[in-house]
Structures are given as C-alpha cells and as structure tokens.
Image 1 (tube, helix red, strand yellow):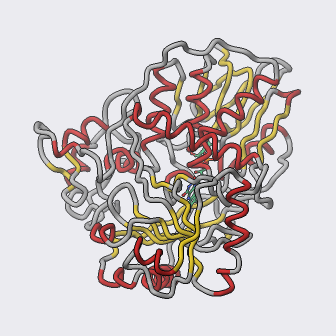
Image 2 (tube, rainbow, N blue to C red; image 1 turned 180 degrees about the vertical axis):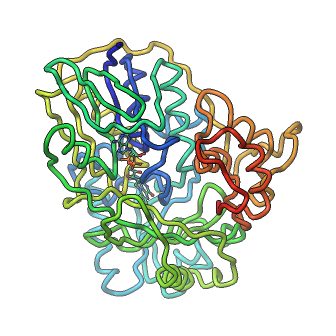
Length: 459
Ligand SMILES: Cc1cc2nc3c(=O)[nH]c(=O)nc-3n(C[C@H](O)[C@H](O)[C@H](O)COP(=O)(O)OP(=O)(O)OC[C@H]3O[C@@H](n4cnc5c(N)ncnc54)[C@H](O)[C@@H]3O)c2cc1C
C-alpha cells in the first residue's frame, strides 16, 4: 500500500487550505473527510467576513494567521475567480459606555498593524450609511474588512490540490489508527490509509480525534452556536458597510452585513451547547435578531426574511487557536479554529507547513501551479444566466441555470450531496427555499448522491 507524505483529516475551511498548501509545496497528500462533500462541518455556516485582524489578540498566532490568510486571499482571488465585496466595517458605539471603549479598540487595531482605521462622528456615520439609526453615537471605520463568498474559495483550493496529485476521499471517517515509529496506519470507514504525518483538521471533532489516536487531547471542544437571519435582496440596497458591535471578551457580537449573494444578514448569536452535530434555530432568538437589526437599520422592518440558519464554532475552553505538534508521533493538531477560520485558513496552512518543515521534512514546490477558476456565485459579478446557452433557469429565486447545475454535478470535484450542490450554485437558497425547484433538482440529481434529494426536502 502506498504511503502518503501527509494525511489531512477534515475538509473544512482549514483542511481544504491545508491540502492546497501541502500539494503546492510538492507533498503527496491525502485528505480524509467523513462528510459526503467538503465543508460539511463548522465551515458550511458563517458570516463570510474577511477580517483584517484589527481586534485579534496582539502577538497571537491567530492574528498572524489571519493577516497572512487575508493577504494571500487578496493575492490569489482573481486567478481563482473569487469575489470581494469591498464594504469596509464600522464598529458602532450605541451608548456612552460603548463609546468609551472605542479608544482601546482603535489602539489595538493600530498595534495589530491595521493603521487605516479612523473615527467617524455621528454625522459622518449618517453620511456613509443614511439608513443607520440616528442612535449611533460614534464609530471606528475599518476600511479593510470585506465580505467574500464563504464556500467557493475552498472548492478552488481543493481543485488545485487535486490537480497537483492530492487524493481526496469523502465519506471517509478516520475511526482509529496506529503509529509504528515511522508511518501512521489509519483505519477509516472506507478502508486503510497510510501516511508519514497526520494533520488533524477535524474541527468540531478535533479533540475526539486526538483522544482516539494519540490517547489524549490537550483541549476540549465546546461548540458555540451562532444563529442568523437572512433578509431578502432589497435589503442590500439600504446598507453597504458591515456594522459591527463593540466586541466583548467572549464574542465579536451580532453583525449586520451584506452577503456576496446579494442579501443582508444579521447574526450570529453565541450560545454554548454540547451537541456537535446539530445547530437548530429558535424562534425567540431569531425574533431577537430581527429586532436588533431593525433597531440598527429601521428600514429593514419593511424587508422580508428569506432564510434563517445556524452554525457551530469549534470553540474550546480558551480563546486561542489550539495548534500543536506531537513530534515523536508525526502528528500536528490544528484545533479550536473558532471564529476566524474563513479568513485565517490560508495563513494557518502556511504556519502549519513551517511546523512540518521543523519536523525535518522538505519537498520541492510545484514550479508553475495550475489555478482552477471556480464558477462565480457573487451577485455583483457576471452570473451564468447572463451568458447565452445556459439551457434554462432551474432556481428562479437565485437565477441558477441548468448549465451551472450540470457543471456542479460533473468535473473534478462533483457535488456529493444537496448541500454541496447548493454551495456550488446557490440553488434553493432564495425566497422559496426550494419550494419551486426541488422537484426538478430531485430529477437532475437522481443517482448522484448517496442520500437522494426528495421533492419535499427543505433546501
Ligand atoms: C456562526 C459562525 C460565524 C463565523 N463567521 C466567520 C467570519 O465571518 N469570518 C471568519 O473568518 N470566520 C468565521 N467563522 C469561523 C469559521 O467558519 C471557522 O473557523 C471554520 O469554519 C473552522 O473550520 P475547520 O476546518 O477548523 O472546521 P470544520 O469546518 O468543522 O471542518 C472539520 C471537518 O472535519 C471532518 N471530520 C471530523 N472528524 C472526522 C474524522 N474522524 N474523520 C474524517 N473527517 C472528520 C468534519 O466532517 C468537518 O468537515 C464563523 C463560524 C461560525 C460558526
């Protein structure tokens, strides 16, 4: 049986970026994911903000990875056809107490190298965001906070890794394993895999994987749920800047932001729970989010809600990332990538590659890597329906074409489940939430997924 240089466990944001980095560096990579597609865990639901790191702990690995990830995303995004909504963000003080904290937040931003921040008076806030409530007292403008497509980057990174030889195995859960002093033998639900080094990117199950294969874990995952409300497309006409609250020690707080798909969302909450699999939404909480959104931007009261969703952060008992090397067993743990992993993933991958080099490994980097372009999902860029020959529109709410659906079900990394199809095309994400297109999608995807889509399924 062949032995890979590296086995990466988990195809979340972190694992996908890791597979790309190691493949580009010339390592022989296998990626093992228990879900039937990429982004099956924490990474499927987030706020999609590309953070500058202005409020990250100074000097932390998290800050270092966020800023490296941010810079690399901006450098590579056009070649992958990835969008960027250059919204900027305002940390808004709604009370005198919050206003008193803006000095410290500004000082921290400058200390973190985010030096283009500036204070806005109440008048300047209103000039920039006329629909924001007059209750806004003062704000810190962070021009470099942006909105991205939360899913397509990782499809692009995995396609690139695959183009450079990475073996990608979905529906493959690592259940046990042993290290013989030289190689790891991993028992998975689809057979045995061998590798010299294992990188644990198992997100919400990172502690469990360490405990199972190393015998102990140095941290405990404490899932932290975030619920969101998504407003219909007209909302994007009444807000352009990301509205951030003054953060607390525990959470970045409830954000109001546009999405790359042309909506506005409010959330996330921060609720601890034991369940690592299910993120439910609760009516009272959602009503609270709606009320908060309308308090900030009263005109949102006139906009319909399109969807609600929730995600789970892989938080631990500490705020910091839990990245560690067990050198005597060729094992690297990348755990606790709580609430900034979308931004930091590319930086984390570079950071971990350096840790791997410190273990004594070296490869020859691919001299001229291929960069697969991903289909554009962003509302402000050219969509597929705007080019002739698309066949027909399948999802009318989100204007998803038959050609897009067919392409997402074919090629190097076809969608492995309905969630994956949605994340590759936007189908079923609109106002009707799949009511009108599910029947056709069920026909189009017949035989494609292990769990077929039934007509009555919610999108
Ligand atoms: C509500 C919310 C809002 C957020 N907002 C932002 C934001 O605006 N900006 C930002 O930068 N970040 C944000 N984040 C953070 C970001 O989404 C996370 O940091 C990131 O998704 C963590 O990715 P991960 O790869 O570590 O974990 P995951 O996505 O959970 O990936 C781990 C993968 O490992 C797989 N796995 C687990 N165990 C095994 C096993 N034994 N064998 C095989 N596979 C296994 C899982 O199926 C999963 O796919 C937010 C997160 C949430 C929840």
